[in-house]
Length: 133
Image 1 (cartoon, rainbow, N blue to C red):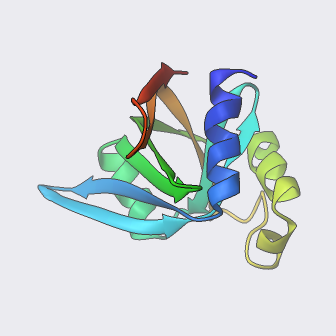
Image 2 (image 1 turned 60 degrees about the horizontal axis):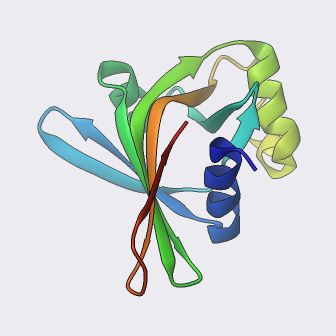
């Protein structure tokens, strides 16, 4: 299993993860649930009208944290927007429940992929595992 697959599998198993962005000098954190691999990269999805999208456009540095099975993962890196219809449709195909609110060509749907990501899986009982993708 590749490193990006390990990270995505962990996020999917957790179900909900928390995405941290920055707005000026203020951290912003909110729950997310989309994690998808497209063209070998880890993608997330949101709406362009949301504050999270505006924050990522201003500063792409972000971090994800999720907890499951007594372990947690932190993924830090830069999230880059991918406005291609194919990338958006791939995400929507992977998450059919989103299709009631989003369409690949609606002008609002946006997907982001991690660039230069560093993941750390930790627990209270073992040494942290670090990997990049």
